[in-house]
Image (cartoon, rainbow, N blue to C red; front, side, top):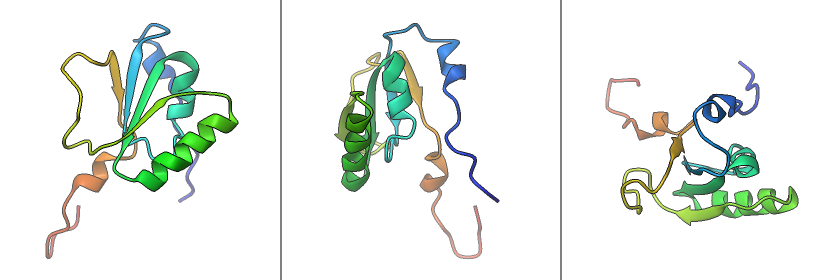
Length: 104
C-alpha cells in the first residue's frame, strides 16, 4: 500500500469561516498544519518535540505561521470553546494499547 499524501482540508473549509481558530491535534511534522495556516489561525499540538521542531521548520520555509505546543491529545491544555474546529488525522490509531493476543 502506498501513502497518497495528506488528505485535503476542503471538508473543513466547508464548515469554518476563514480566520477561524483550528487545532491540529497530533500535528506531527505539520503536513496538515501548514495548509490550515493558509486559511485559519492554526495551533498544532503533538507529544513529540522532535516532530514539532520539524513542523516549525517546515512552516517557516513556506512562509506560514502556526502556534506549536508540546501536549498530549489525552490531556488538552485548553479552555472549553477555544477552537472553532479540531483536526485529528492519523492519530487516533496510536491510542490503542497492544494487548496480548489482541490486534487492534
